[in-house]
Length: 421
Ligand code: LLP
Figure 1 (cartoon, helix red, strand yellow):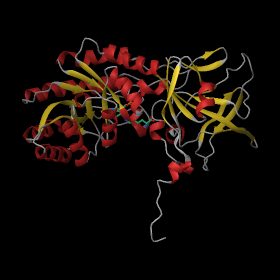
Figure 2 (cartoon, helix red, strand yellow):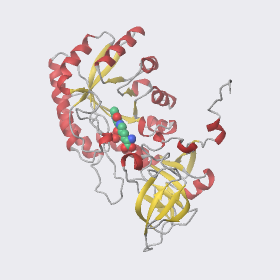
Figure 3 (tube, helix red, strand yellow):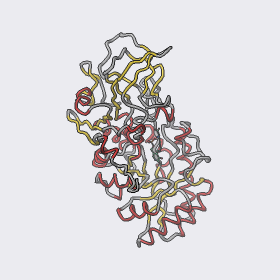
Figure 4 (cartoon, protein in one colour):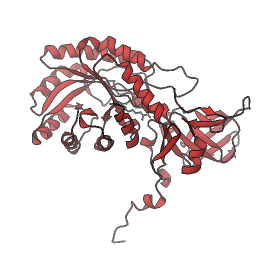
């Protein structure tokens, strides 16, 4: 559920008219709903009630500091994967003891940053990383709390580019070698082993892969305890999928996911962490664009809009579907026609949708791409020297620009011409 609904023929973001935002900030822009973000966070928080738990928002999905502050103030922890994300979480006022550091390629500088600024735990993904982290911690006279990310070799049944829990994927250490790796970790003086981490992929639309992975983690918890390790925390990753198409079979709900967690690992008495990103932010955002031209091809109509693959790369990168809706509500029963919805970028991959059924649209009409809260702004670029576009946050009847549109000068002046020229 989200808070982008038509009211009196106009698409609204909560109580704000989207056409009104467009008039003030120009197009294209992203708009996020406070109510939806908070609602989705709370669904997870409630789903784990009765267990000692922390819901750590996956910052990679939507990293605007205002959004992080909103969720942090609501009680969320943060899952970060870079020094930049760590500093964003800190800038949002999240305390270090609620920030989890994930990722396979943490550098010494990133480790130092987090150890100095405070960290809940590092999710370590390899033996070399363990050794380096131990050294860095000792050099700072401290001890780094860690979990080891295990790769359970489970098929998440999602898009290959976002599956992470199969043995051919680059993530984690094979679960079959976990006991020896934990034995090694226990010997490193700069580390304190506190738990186990697992994350098998993103946009999962079934619960079964989670069940298989968590069952393996539960078994491993018991083995590691019998080996003498103090396993008190399980980080179960993110990945629960969202409905991208309105007519889709909806993926399982956080409530069902929470029940599964209780069933599979509840008896272990561990503190539970999860790292959802997309389900919290995905349907809490739209990308709003304007039609520039309607062009007739030989056998099709192209709707050329002012947003492009640099603003929303998911269709080009994963063949992802995003619902597209007009900002002015179509009259009931109006004939729809198929459009290829494309951006202005000079490659054919800059196509959002082919043969998408839409009511007739004219130049200057506004359209909204739904489910653009997650992995949209964060994956944007300036390809074709298109400046990054603004992010807007709505709260009830108010809205604020939470990242302004850079000027062309901002963009161009980042380049410097060497003196010798
Ligand atoms: N934890 C870890 C360690 C992750 O790698 C990820 C996502 C998450 C949590 C959050 O997963 P979520 O709940 O959002 O599914 N750019 C792709 C998605 C990449 C996901 C990467 N890792 C897309 O647009 O579909």
